[in-house]
Length: 456
Image 1: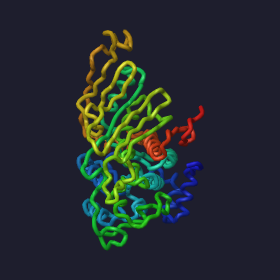
Image 2: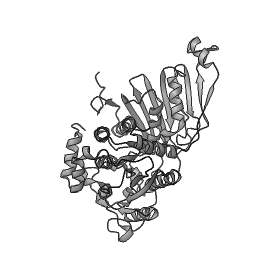
Image 3: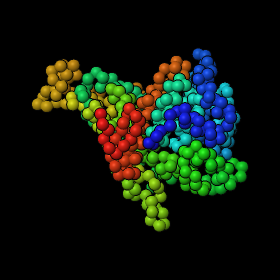
Image 4: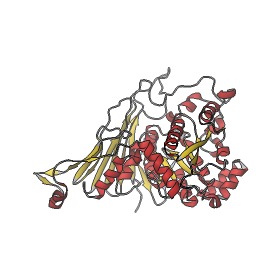
């Protein structure tokens, strides 16, 4: 955006488009509400879930199961624009159900919300929740645009809320052990990180079932508030007539998702940022790919807007590159690793970033029987491969635990908003590069993308 709104202007714009008076009042008094309810050591944290599709239901069940094991939290409200999903989730947890998320945010006993809506709603819902004094577990890819990322970073600072981005991969022990290995000097200067995310289904990724009869004209459980889902009133997506494919298979369309880039690459880029010496914005991003396989419509046109095969290359100011590969038509992965001048860390040998591994391997760089890092390196680490054991705790349990613990301590969670922003900017620039056929450059000081190199 050439003239991005600052957060205050953004809230004024939202208010002008008809948000409920109670929500507008909450936005104006956010500083007073930012403390939220004081949660005692033995109090269960009350959680509301916004978005009760497949991921939202999974998150709700995971929080509920964790809460029952640890007496740490409970689901107290559910919201979805689809009456059936709302009802099923509300009935399952025996809680209040809402079609409008703003009504859920007005429920005073809620301490935190899970935002698992389609991507184009993530930023707005998270900011509204924080303005109501709620902490937020925000599903990846965090936001849909770079401007929303900037606004979200500012909102967390202003409201002092806890926000955990829901890429549970980042709470796996792998990345924290890799981070320590890098800090200890086991690979020397970082040169390149690589990873992938591959799948292969006969119907193509994101072609989820369409439920007949559901829509804005549906009766009873079949009713869907299509206008609210689009978010046109908040300029989140263009106004369109009802389209069941767009609703049930939203990840295939640029208006609501960036496909592979936002759905899958976030699980690779975010943990890599965790284990680098510090999370980083890219300086330069380029991407390529295409719709190579899933051209299934009768007229021969693709059944999607986003590519089924996508590759990304990013450069960083410290002389470090990121290389990612993905296809929805082939499931052979590339090992996840970080190369340094003096050594290499293989974190995910099987290449599947959302699966645990028993150990990570550090391979010293050796030439002529001597360590590239010299005598000091050889004396400290030797010349043979080093295997570092990895804790096998369930990633989702660890991520929920970290979020709830940070709600109590007010410490920064594993995947905080700033680390999350550094990951999502790469994704958004890559999608822009692919769509425009240009190399994109990032001006971190001004949160601005350009197809011209940034002057320093």
